[in-house]
Every structure is written in C-alpha cells, then in structure tokens.
Length: 363
Ligand SMILES: NC(=O)c1ccc[n+]([C@@H]2O[C@H](COP(=O)([O-])OP(=O)(O)OC[C@H]3O[C@@H](n4cnc5c(N)ncnc54)[C@H](O)[C@@H]3O)[C@@H](O)[C@H]2O)c1
Ligand SMILES: [Zn+2]
View 1 (cartoon, rainbow, N blue to C red):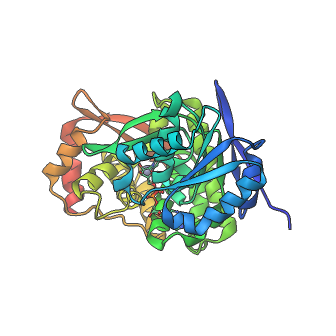
View 2 (tube, helix red, strand yellow; view 1 turned 30 degrees about the horizontal axis):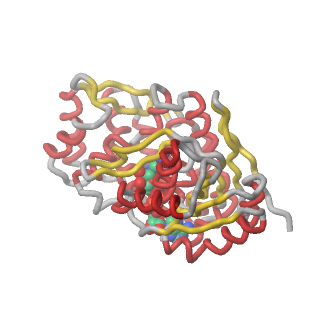
C-alpha cells in the first residue's frame, strides 16, 4: 500500500522549507529529514509521547539519527521560560551542537516552545515541526513564530525562527479530544473568510463530514489552510502588513480570553466569537455585509463552535482591547471582512468600538 504524500513548500528569500502532508505518513518522517547521523531531541508531552513516541523514535533510528526524548507537562501554563530552561539543561547534558536538531511532537504549546529553544540554543539550531493538533497543523507549525508566555501575557518572549521541515500527518488527529478538535476548526473557517471563498463553501458543504473527521474532507481543509498560511507568510514574513490578516477574529478573541482568564474558552472558541464580533462590526460600519454575518454564523454553529458574545463587563473588554499590541494612537486595528474570502485591516476609533460592543454585548 503506497502512502499518498503531498509536498507543499514555504519559500522565503533566505531559503525555505518543505511542508509534507499525508495520512499515516509517520513511518517516513526520519527519511524525510535527510541523511541521518545527527543528534535529534524529540520534545513532547507525556500523553503524546505515549501515543506517538515509539513510531517517531523508530522512524528516526531507522533513518540513522540518534534520537532522545524530552517531555514536559501539557497545557498553556507550561509554555514558560522555566521549561525552556530545562530543555537547555537537557541539551547541554547531552552535548547538543550546532548541527543537532530538535523535533516538536505535539500541539502549538510544544511547537512554540521547541521553536523558541531552537531559535536561542547556541544562537540557533534547526528544528522540525510534527504538529498533532488541528491548530498546530494549520497554523502554529507554519510560519516561524516561536515563543513562550510571561506571567504578564501570552507570547511576550519569542523570536522568528523558521523550521527546517514541517511534517503533517492528519491521522494523528484521531486521538484529539472532541472539544480540542472542534476549536481548531475555527482557524480553518478563518482562512476561508480572509482568503478563500471556495474553502469556505467546501466547509459549508462538508460540515458534517468534517465533524466526523472524514479523511478526504479533512485533508483538503488542512492542505488548503497550509497553502494559504504559507502564501501569506511568504509575502510578509515579519508581519509588517499582509500577515496581519491572519489575526482575523483574534483581537476580540484575545480580549475574551483575557477577561475570562483563559479558563472558560479554548482559543479557537474565543476566535469563533471574535470572528462574529468582527463580522458584525464590519456590517455595522457599512464595509461588510449581512451575508457574511449570517453565513459565518451558520458555518461556525454547524461545526459546533460558539458564536454568541458572552455577557462580559464592557469596561473590562475595552480595557483589554485598548491595551492590545494592535492599538496605535488610540485607534484599534481590526481585520474586518468585506465579503467571504476577502478582508481589510481597518483603524477604528474608540467611539464606534464602544457603541458596537455595547450592542453586541446586549444581544
Ligand atoms: N506560532 C504560531 O504561529 C501560533 C499560531 C497559533 C497558535 N499558537 C500557539 O499554540 C498554542 C495552542 O496550540 P494547541 O491548540 O495545539 O494546544 P496544545 O498544544 O496545548 O494542545 C492541546 C491539547 O491536546 C493534547 N494533544 C495534542 N495532540 C494530541 C493528539 N494527537 N491526541 C491527543 N491529545 C493531543 C495536548 O497534550 C494538549 O493537552 C498556544 O500556545 C498558541 O499561542 C502559535
Ligand atoms: Zn489562533
């Protein structure tokens, strides 16, 4: 039985890398990493290590690498400098060199942490992304943003450092808890709204199949999302312009996550509500349409994602929105949809934001 493998790529001025996508391709990971010989540290969580560690280690050994494993506890609360420090210790104990490689096996927490350590250890070594969540496969593993959290905020410490390879096997998503899986789908909807009406329509038509993790539907969504992310990053690696559109739904989303202390919502759930707020805002400002609001709501709901703005104190939300990185001169930058498949970045004054938020919050 042959494996069906798709080779995508991300091309940057200083070179680029391959993004390999296919169901059940785990056994060819090692050989995809080039000629063996170097040390590889697989960074993962115990849960993921138990599920996929053996397969990864076997594939690496077979290809001539000398893999070792470092595990740290799962959860956003562990994406810290303290855990990065433990990985540095581990790499030093095991005499890792400039030619050694790290391999991130896990979701965005593992990916961001591994990328950050790779960016900083010995002033930068190579790393491979093997994402195992929807969020990581369609978003976090691609594009080279790495980092850890600080008690004062998420991703405050980080670096741009591109991986040398991204290896995406959607069969790994079979073991993902339902809520985690569904939350990740919000990011795929995001790609549809910001960039690709056909992807959006595909999701509308296949919502039920996608929810059942139907292979063919899921593979299409993942591949297309990766292509879009790669294309956007190629055009604007360091987020000076176009890359901002990837923040669609995230300005409100982050505000909701912060006000609810990252406890009530998964990131994707907050983004889902955030996309509804942005679509409403565009409609009320006259730059968007009711069609976007309605189609987006129907799709998100069909996928089991929340769309209603929670009852939160307006003052808290505004305080967080206005302290966001995206505030410039008292105006907040929002990514607003004009129609399905196309967005623009708009500077919005405090007044209209307050008014619209008040309306949405009361709904
Ligand atoms: N660098 C970027 O561009 C970027 C983009 C988006 C998100 N992120 C970051 O990604 C993180 C969120 O990532 P996430 O949503 O993947 O969360 P996560 O990494 O915390 O993973 C979610 C949970 O699923 C478990 N898990 C992972 N894969 C599994 C599998 N195949 N089977 C069973 N369980 C599995 C994990 O152990 C964890 O408990 C955040 O820290 C966010 O800041 C980064
Ligand atoms: Zn996101």
